[in-house]
Image (cartoon, rainbow, N blue to C red):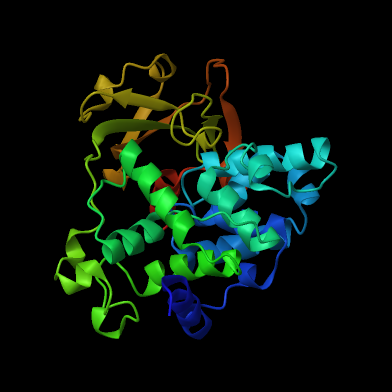
Length: 341
């Protein structure tokens, strides 16, 4: 059997039953692919179901507010995905008469959609002969063919895309694309059980006992440390929040006023913030550590009491019980849960 046929046969026996696999609706496939970027299926499934329930059609998504979309996305991370999802829904609804583009070349023009997602949608929904290449595909192809070219290099990306296209099933491109991704997710994992792999006889990495050596990467992710001091200021019933407007992590989510420092702050007197001049310091939380792909965030929540707040642009006073109506970073949610408990 050919490489593609072996994978399709394996897929027919072992694939997971997932709701977006039972449809050729480009809206539902697109929604699932955006949610599953940087997200495990076990986590993304609940979010997919919530979005489909809240927004049965792309028009429903387009006509809601970004704040509501971000709130529904809360906890999933990489919030630019949600902002791009909403922006693209508006384009399809308002400029394309609600009709999702039919071809790879048109789909890839939409905001937040790259080569992988465009290939997935066009092949799954329309049978277009475009190969997908994601982390799972890189792992399967690099091991099977024994390719040492770094997958994060310009040359490597081009080489793997061309190889993926060569391996694509001409008769069943969508099914093959789903098969190789599922194979990488369930069988050819970072720590695979090669003894039950249908490709083991002809797999270069398996035959040379080099499975853990693939795929090859040339770049190490540089991780920087950031120190966030959130100012929880208000009274017994209310506090102040603001929307993150800067093009940084958590853009357009709500948070407490923030004082970012170059190192850990140990005393409230180090927080040189004008809004604190007449505030009474109450307590400081434990330090919360939050890991992102390129950042380590160390955060503390400094609680102050202030009866009369000076006018500060962008600050919104809300009842504490109403915070659940706003999309906030997971880091802030952890703090709120700790205070509640």
